[in-house]
Image (cartoon, rainbow, N blue to C red; front, side):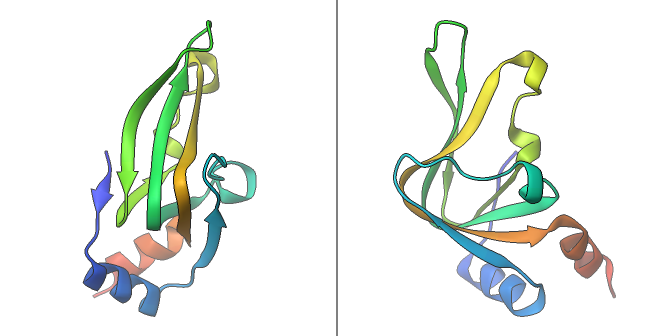
Length: 109
């Protein structure tokens, strides 16, 4: 599931929670593994495709991610179920938030 935030929501998040930003060129894979695996991603600008490939290297677009959409590594297929990845369809910029920081912030009174 993808959650889309408004500009107001994004401004609120970036004002209250630490984040990093990374830019990606068209065709570049969006980082969600290793050092990014415990992070929630928020598309700041651009367009990202969640893609999967079958054994014949045929690509399917599973989801289109637009500005304001939140996504994470959990959207990818498990390794034993095939190949999936996130790719920038055009120049894109992603905010990375630690999942624990967002959950902690949302659970405060």
